[in-house]
Image (tube, rainbow, N blue to C red; front, side, top):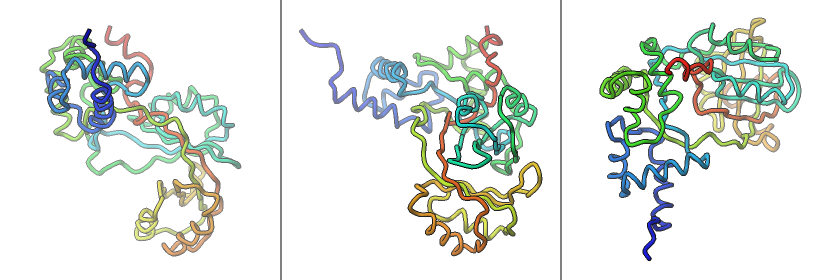
Length: 309
């Protein structure tokens, strides 16, 4: 009796395609899975079945918006005096996209948030049983980040994620009480304006922490040329210039993504070569975690489902 299951090689190929193939550009099309099936050599039914299986196993997230550089929002870097056990409360906040745990000393937890504005940040931090030690508003992602979202309900819907179906945009339209054509037209307009970079279907962030090292300077002179040279160093992850004020007492902080233990001296030699002669006031190993690929800007109060029902 012939089997209805796809050959193992076909299934394996489909899984690989789905996990890697639409992380950057999920089709903004009336029947996206039909279009994707034509590109992958599978049938739409096979493709959707494999998607659902990957989602059930936790290997694939829903179809979600990735916001573009033109969408106005704020980026903040925060420091907390708190034990590692508070990471769960911190990572649960929708605006939190990154956590760094220092191996010793204070501040012991560092985090990066993206929010629509400072009020949204305060509303989230009020939920925390943590002591905020320092905060810094980071420069805008791009000089063009000047457009406010003109449809919060649609933004919340595509940020929360579209489910796997023959026409996920029609499902979104029904939830919002609109036409599917209007939904796709509005998303296309956001893409043209740069507010929406793309729709993406991708695996969740890795749950394995990465190791790194944080270096802090309270009293150091910087320049545009020095900061540029520092950002060009191998393994550099973050170079943050600060005001050296009570809200953020460091003039310079650098995060290196690499195993810090065998290479501290080499790391310091690289800094000197780049023109940074002064040794850091603090140099501490980190464990870096990513709670989510992108901060949730619009799904911040758990009320999306109620607003759309």
